[in-house]
Length: 78
Image (tube, rainbow, N blue to C red):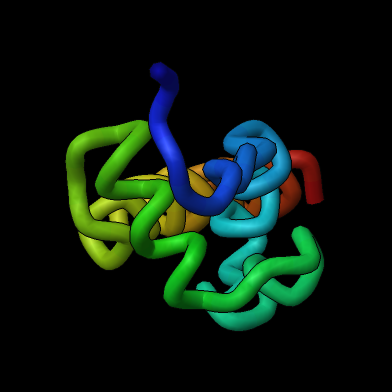
């Protein structure tokens, strides 16, 4: 007999990463994906084995670094 209970929500982690890199909040990301923030947090723990706060900080840092690179390049190019 198979497992019972609600179907697990699939998360588009690529979309999540892209939204985190442009500094979206967890609530904004969850809303864009049609789920609650709590569901997003549970899915992060289930799929990535880390808290969403930890994951989001890693990906937001990537976005900030990318923005600084673009600003530096723009400054150098005049």
